[in-house]
Length: 109
Length: 119
Image (tube, rainbow over all chains, first blue to last red):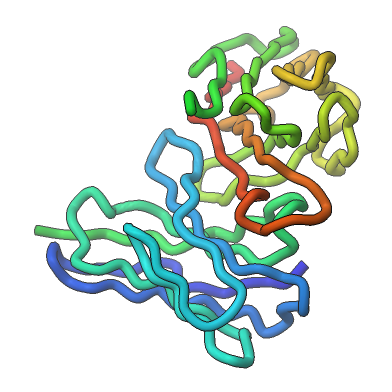
């Protein structure tokens, strides 16, 4: 399973765009990139998933360059409620998920 | 979609006691997963089922741990002779899994977890 590297923490202010980059140099051909969000005392919540190029949904965008060795989760106009831990995962989607320690995002007023 | 349900949300027990947790997956999801999460760490995989068959178990799942999914619907995770090191959040997830088909179907949806404290 591909190992991921992402920043331990990030700080932002309300209304700003936040970009969290994840490195996955050993990503395999069949691997997908999936991001989860987790609030304290709750289970992880699926945010977005992609294989290549750009994926957008109602909450985030995921940018994946052609070599797929990294990906960037973009959260537009964050609010205080976006304060959470964000996990980048790489793997074959129907297998077990391998979580790292994630990125702790703190959004301040 | 009622989501993944876990019961109880919190459990406090004394060392040496047995505990059992229940997970009700999203209906029609044929895959069910158990994870454990300790403070400051990401969830760690324990085991998963496809329907009623337990297909993989992590080395984290010692002999004191047993999981079942008898009719391919809800699942239970039992810990016997609990130890203080078992204190953690136990998370259940389900997915409409398979070995083919669109990846979007295989997203794992998590419950809120059961927080176990062993005194």
